[in-house]
Amino acid sequence: MRSPDPAPAPASPADPAGGGGGRGADHLVAALQDLGVDTVFGLPGVHNLAVWEAAAAAGLRVVGVRHEQAAAYAADGYARATGRLGVAVVTTGPGAANTLGATGEAMASGAPVLVVATDVPSTLRRPGVVRGVLHETRDQAAMFAPVTKATVVAAAAGDLYADTVRAGSVALQPSSGPVYLGVPTDLLGAPAGSVARAPVRPAPAPPVDDDELARARELLARARRPLVWAGGGALRSGAGDLVGELARRLAAPVVTTFGGRGLLPPDHPCLVPGPPHVPAVGRLWDDADLVVSVGSDLDGTDTQNWAMPRPPALLAVTVDPADATKNYPADVTVAGDASAVLGHLLDGLPQRDGLPGLRETLDAVAGEVRAVVAADEPQAGALLDALDRVSDRTGVLLADMCIAGYWAAGFARVPGPRRLAFPLGWGTLGYAFPAAIGAALAGRGRALVLVGDGGFLFACGELATLVQEELPVTTVIVDDGGYGMLRFDQVHSGVPTQGVDLVTPDFVALARSFGVPARAVDGFGEEFASALEEGLGTRGPDVVVVRAALVPPPSTSPRWYRRRQAVP
Image (cartoon, rainbow, N blue to C red; front, top):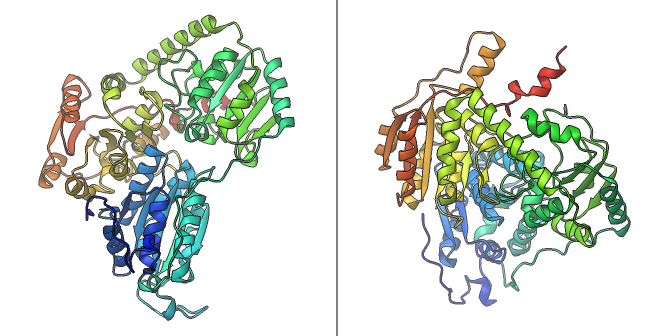
């Protein structure tokens, strides 16, 4: 459902803004609004209808999806594209459980998502006993504990405003991530009294330790071949300009992780034009005498499962010192928000010589990266060319866990922060298409989805959501007849293919049955590029089906070059 256009609601007993009281659901919605939320994603159920009613009355837009997992993915897509709180409202038991995969992806990728799930009425609970109430579980909140920063369970209607503010604030606080808010359904309709409302301000960042800064400055001063490694924490902090300036002053190359892509503009003189899984990029790490890691935990996916050698010196800038040094021990760790720490480090940092030489080096690296793409998979080069041509005209590119998505996530031009969403992360197949629901509502422009035929079928019913909400989403479905990456794994291992060749529908007919314009092309040549350009001019959703099979890029684990080097 779509709520009415936002407008001030008159103070009434159902409106906590007027101080006259209201139901628990009204207080929950008021708290969301004070957290800066104007759009939520959800699926109605008998237990949570009061939230939908309160949201509509308050002018909050509620986007109804066709599966609860899609609600959490859409909230994730919205959060990644905006940096604001993404909210999924789902119902009790199986409805809540359906969000767990998407919630885990938000946790792994640091997306600030609030999952609001109803639970069985508190009046029907009996401690330690599962009585058989509709949708009852032994401990619903416990299901979410491994995939959230925190779980908050409301105990009284009068607590719902404060509980919601607390849960949303924790989700947004660095390191950001998902939080579960459980609400016994009877609290939503119960009188909640009055509440003092106010815009929710972020908690002040703790001060940066002067001793740590001094030690970090010493490392920077001694380094002769520094390299900056920037991750998702740097992007979420909004530290792109500061990372770019640090790199300029140091004349240092900047490698961005999957989570950090788009942090620097594509024409920045220090930006490394490719992922660390390409040998030409990996050599920059190998040659560095200091790695400055900003907002990264140096995870297995980006380091080829830590096959990259420990650098001679490592400076970690992070909000979570334990997380930043769990994989590579740091010589110095400066705890704090990346923007705040880099601001201190730049104070008085001199400009080094070497930028022209660095530019020559990175131009040579770019040539090697292009050669790798051309040699590995010519069709991938055509795909990347087509994406590059439209990158400045699209809002967010959402790449799924499919071969085309892997190529785009590692090698496509990303014109700015929060312009790429990729579930790595947890690696959840089927992420990109439902996440585009949220990304399309982020005010960034048209969302562009790259998804395989297998991943698209996880949530193909969300075509109805795109139509219902008239969302600007172009979906590119790459149809290779199954799970192409898994097929490659089996063929590469010399075993017969099993479970990877799929019966798939006529995707063009499927899309058109929902009223979505669709066309099919063969390969990623000019016909595809033309279809992509045409899609960008469409007002609502459209679908382009590409019949093509690609070889996976070197950023996928079966092709990691350091793994091959380690084999005797």
